Amino acid sequence: MRSLYTRIFLSFWLAMLLTGATLVVLALTTEDPGSELRLREQSLRRLGHDLVWVYESRGAGTLASETARLEEGKQMQALLFKGGEGPLGGPPAPAGIPLLVAESLATHAVQRRFGPDRLWLAVPLTDEYVLVAGLPIPSRLEWLLSPRRLAVRLMVTFVFASAVCFVLARSLTAPIRKLRAATGRFAAGDFSARVGPELGRRRDEIAQLGGDFDVMAERIEELLRAQRRLVRDISHELRSPLARLTVALELARQDSNPEVAAPLNRIELEATRLNDLIGQLLALAALESDAETLVREPVVLRTLVAEIADDAAFEARHRNRTIDVHPGGETATVPGSAPMLRQAVENVVRNALRHTDEGTSVEITVGERQGEGIGTAVVSVRDHGPGVSEEALPHLFEPFYRAAEARDRRTGGSGIGLAITDRAVRLHGGSVAASNAPGGGLLVEISLPAGEPVPTGGGAPAISEAPGAS
Image (cartoon, rainbow, N blue to C red; front, side, top):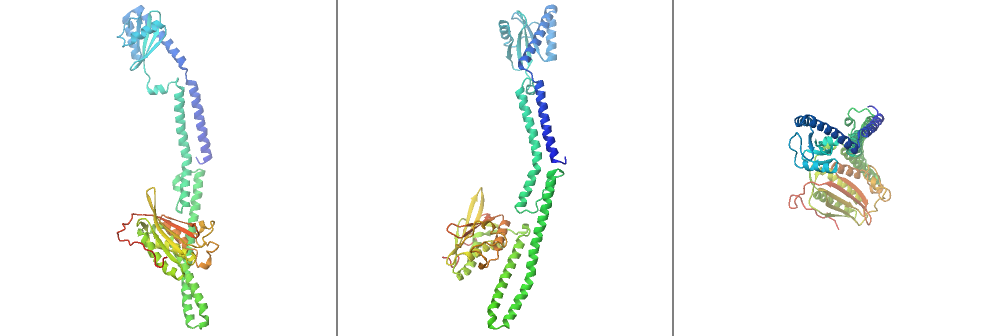
């Protein structure tokens, strides 16, 4: 069906039609158990009178032939008793049947008794004659299909209707679930997610929606590729004039007077910052490429953090700041790229070093968390600066985003370092989050899936407090 509306309409219309037809059939075929019992007793009385006539007019031999014919054709065993004696012209009665006959003669009512494979009914015919009929016990299927069991038939109908509704609901919602899964992958950063192959040959409104989603996803993926390519190309193109500017600056410095030294130094400083910015743009463009090219190897996180802290401590001493490292947990490894992870952590540390107040320290903590059997390595970096507003926290890891207040351009940041950190961490299957620490300052936590721990006595050096730490 090409129209989802038509499919839903016909499905519910058909379900209502089947339900109504089933109820009508049940109403017409369901019998009153009392009326059925009366009909059976009347039938057995007629049969019994016929057998009495056969016995009295033609003798016991003919009666035996007639009862044998009944047992062969109707699967019913018929025994005729007279005055409590018998059976007349037949095989011996099963145990307990004479007592059943006596009860029927005494009460002048039908008596019932279940045997191993038959239901025995003793039907009084006259003051002397009693017909005992052995009826086969119905099978489970016959018991379920019996027109006298309305509750059972309604239950079977309900189960069947529930199964039909389940199949209909599943068939109608299956493409929606596939579309939702594709949009979820796309929202999580998998821009290659498509829903068209999952929907097959459907031609309804959901298939059209899936096609529109694929077109949108393709267009967004093309725009992102174009954006990354543009950033990469511009960054490469800027390197050439920047290199010529540096050469020209050195030539101007050689032929200049001491009076112009300060402006030339300023030009050199800005050129250096521009070169650093271009390098970060190229690094971000490289991280935005396909994650499948990532070369993974065991990285000892504590060792990596120790090296970063040692490098940052040299800069911290010149700014009257310190680096404090607090190791914790086992020596866990993180499967991934050591240079990429180093850049991710170093960007956070240097960002904290720029914004922490003079005379304070940047605290780096390495630890582990366990959750549902999965180990997670955590690197926490805290500064003692002014922090950021709560509204700015979700945007700190966006490229070129700058928080207002004290964390502005005077610190010399480019607004790309934390974006590089976020992308690098996500490529390793981790996450990074920022929050305002109690007592002031910004706290950044990097969480990475941990691999097998390295024994403390192994080749990994133990982490130590960075030089210049307080």
